[in-house]
Image (cartoon, rainbow, N blue to C red; front, side, top):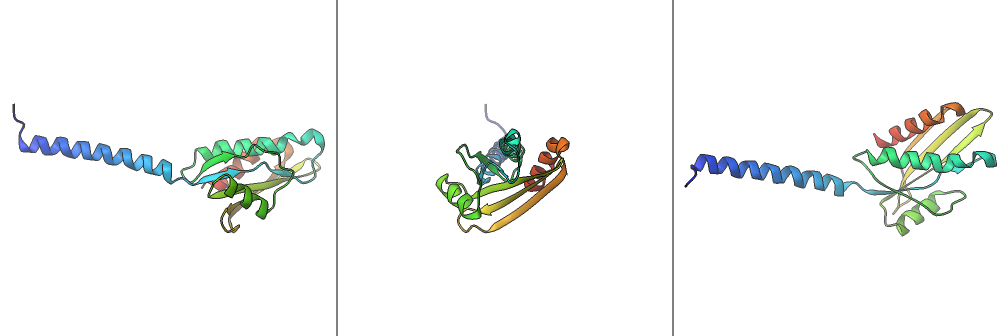
Length: 151
């Protein structure tokens, strides 16, 4: 049984639109640049606060995974502190486009989190963010910092 030309064109158009939407979403996934997320340097924390470095890194990875701008890759090696040169070098070794590194500074019962997104090829700072508040609000501060980076 032959289909009418109008019906054939409609089916072809529907198939083309479906393929276009699939290829666009695949492209969007592939277009997200890989970004190396380094552990945050603890500037003056005590040994019982050492977990903060990994916790901030982990939360940043989770939040940036939801962002259409980044494809985060968590750095799993040991790192006492990071400089622009170190972050850029590690990102190039990991074959990522960007590196994100930062620090946590604790004074009394307050904490300041800072982060910098850098281009792995040039070391240029592309974006920076910070979040400051009571140490008891660490979870909220982590989310605030990561959301600043993801928008």
